[in-house]
Figure 1 (tube, rainbow, N blue to C red):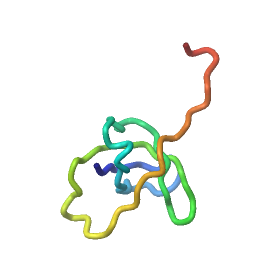
Figure 2: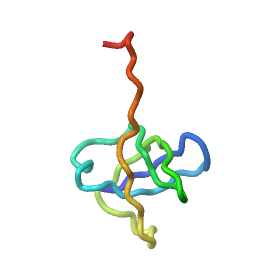
Figure 3: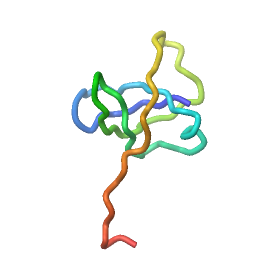
Length: 77
């Protein structure tokens, strides 16, 4: 599976990533994931999901690192 993400801090244009097999069985749209950008791991919002790699992307896509952990909220049950 492949996703298009919007970085929470940084570049204004969306970026493309591949999803590892262990995360590709669930919908990620609207979730915050951890993605590699240069030598850092940063949070990004998943905009779209695609089963196949878009044809216009000729380069190899990096895998996301996982879901961004959210802090516990004692007011939400």
